[in-house]
Image (cartoon, rainbow, N blue to C red; front, side):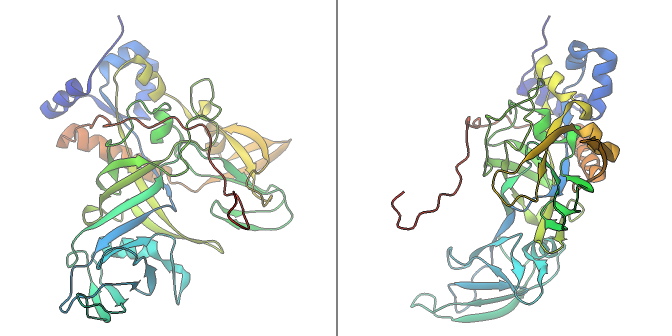
Length: 390
């Protein structure tokens, strides 16, 4: 007899404290011991986690009105540009924006984490002045407790798989995938593999608009499909895409977050980024979902891409599993090459365990998606035009 559960049934168990909640690593052993059908009957929720660089991140801030009021058009936070093209005292600070005096060594990601930590941040803002907003300049300090709203809104997080990076050239490369040594001396990758949220639900049956998540130590939500979202990519037999596919736009209250689960980062000779911790609880609705949730690193594959080719479509040199990548080395074209993760497995495990505690002990219920994501077959590339006659 097939197993079928509903969100309502599972949430009722969560409220009563009787739900069986395990992490995506723990469910693998349960599935091997009990079999898929009995494991699907036994387990109610599987928690996932990832912690890695997610450049497409940032925060909206409302500073509150000064007296006399100002319509901020140019905004600096600790000498980092924040976007001023919104209402009078609303702003968006992007994680990768560099400091005007320190460059990439301090940027928007650092501002976000300083605010989370309760540190004072220097605000300077300018305005041409208007009848209703006569003030032309303000120089003060803010903290998360002194401002009104402050929330993360990250347009592209939590990639569903990502290609591993290699360098076949004879020079050192500094990239968003870290430092790539010449002559294929190393391979870098960035995902938590069998713990990664979108690899555990490859067809996004339970993840969509409105899904409640763990975001940087606080409750958050999936607000939309992420930018560069595409569903129709080549997949393995287990349904997992073999290259970058779906992404998520996510949001949550910055004031409630913890820098234990969100960290600024500087990539040498590349730029500033933000490590973001995301966990998604996945309900075990049926046996098919349990089968997907019990996927192992040895069965999750990605492409190895040559970053030395300065083109949009870079050469794929081969395919490998996350089991191979996690081992610390793999063989490519007869060469044994060292591998290293940009993402933190330690943090991903910690996130999955903390989210497990939220669900099992604190009654963190699951939110069925308000709307499923669309199917997207291709991504547009930027076409160059000299006269607008596209």
